[in-house]
Amino acid sequence: AQSVTQLGSHVSVSEGALVLLRCNYSSSVPPYLFWYVQYPNQGLQLLLKYTTGATLVKGINGFEAEFKKSETSFHLTKPSAHMSDAAEYFCAVRGTGYALNFGKGTSLLVTP
Amino acid sequence: DTGVSQDPRHKITKRGQNVTFRCDPISEHNRLYWYRQTLGQGPEFLTYFQNEAQLEKSRLLSDRFSAERPKGSFSTLEIQRTEQGDSAMYLCASSPQQGTYGYTFGSGTRLTVV
Image (cartoon, rainbow over all chains, first blue to last red; front, side, top):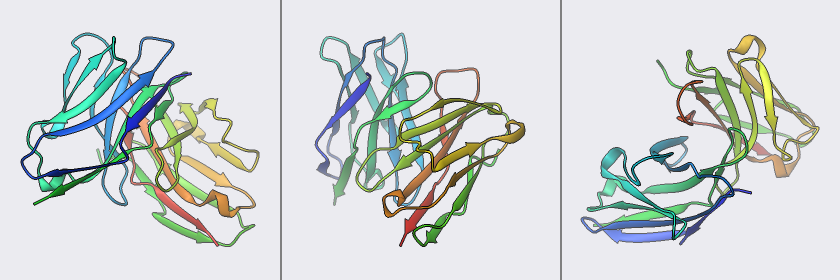
């Protein structure tokens, strides 16, 4: 079965510092991988996705992620955190059919 | 394009009552998904429609849950004889047939069973 593990349920960074949110996946098929962001009481917004091709994927709001097959990882980064980046972040992998299997999420706190 | 709309945003119901949620997908999207999200967890897949056909159902979708998508437009998710464990955020998403999993999520319906 396809699954993801997000390392760290809470991450705190200072404004302007590097953001690094970790995601490792397990998949018996070539993985499609995703990062979503969720603000309080809202739905999820797609930040970026990897399906095939270039392993460094750029997304919205300055985020990017790199697919590393040898490490089964898809970590999310942003060079400089903004206060508005504070939210819940979810990594996901294609499951069977068209379902996505989500991780438990990482809550990002940005301090002034 | 007004995005994916879900109604109601919040629902409080007594245990044992039936509830129904509605989802209006983006009009040109023929794929529609339902997910459930409990506190502190990621969304869990419930079911998937392509047009009016329900093509996938999770084991999470017990006999008390039923989803429909008549005419391939809006969808409803009904929970019969609600239990406290049904309290969660119910999320709807849609995507076009072409392209790879470009889900657009709605804002969700938060259900509280008391």
